[in-house]
Length: 392
Image 1: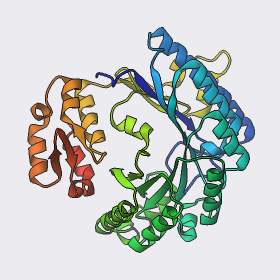
Image 2: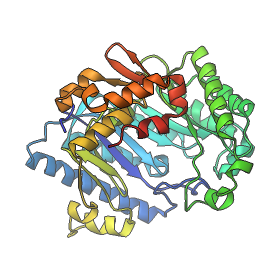
Image 3: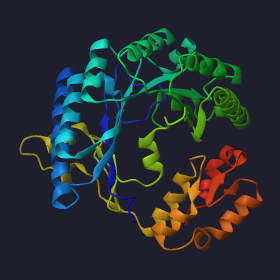
């Protein structure tokens, strides 16, 4: 697969949290200070080794356009390590001056001191996990904060100089109504963040929510029709107030769409650091081990290095790359470019997907806008069905 220019993104996984939420199936867990310190040192080692590998391949001049600290809760880690990691990235890679550098944070874990270090280190975007403005819903989700905690941390971040803040909310919660979701949206919108994400609750196996709700979804969770109504009301509410929907679950003020996530959806290569972090580079995809002991041992003094922590690599075939171009690109409201498809793959979108495109358009699920193909509003409502049509 052809890469998009000479740019690359970096993802840094911080798995630590104060307490694992009841719905969360991400690689995250509480840890003591000694474990966090060992992990911070291991991340620095992995960054150095990965940069050396890039230089050996003759790719050391790739420009880093964005860095994203995700988790877990990155703001649980001592801010010193965030500063050290970014300093290491600047030493080892070519970090663009205007790179978007995002750090995920949970209310109750931010302080004036941490925020000052983040700013000094170069973090220029925060993504704060509110999830709900209803304290009863927050308790149900297993969150450690109240809405008052969120509001306090948000204002502290503004005072610290952060002018690009994203707020995450969840929809289709047990017992949640459309009006309840709108109340949370209104509370968040009053603070005027630059970006808002609204994700539906997913009941994932292995979580307390799975034990509680699996097999009972029809009785305890909003129906598909109610969920669609929630998303419709959400879009209307936010777009009337200046947030434009640019992806199925994401809204932004002008010029404030998340550049890092757009990179994922448009095929920009990326390297992931830390346990369970994914990478996609030079036509190959791999995932780091999710076992903390294995990771620390591989990155420790005398450890076996990158090969010991990376799960078997998977080559992204031309067919797989086409699939991803379509089902990832269609997540964005602007859709996918026919010109870009032809440039990357040497054939037209019609030659590969003509029948599917015609059928989806006939059913009112897709439309053409110039040289782009995109989902209609009804297509967004059944996006999983539409995207599955583009799998070989």
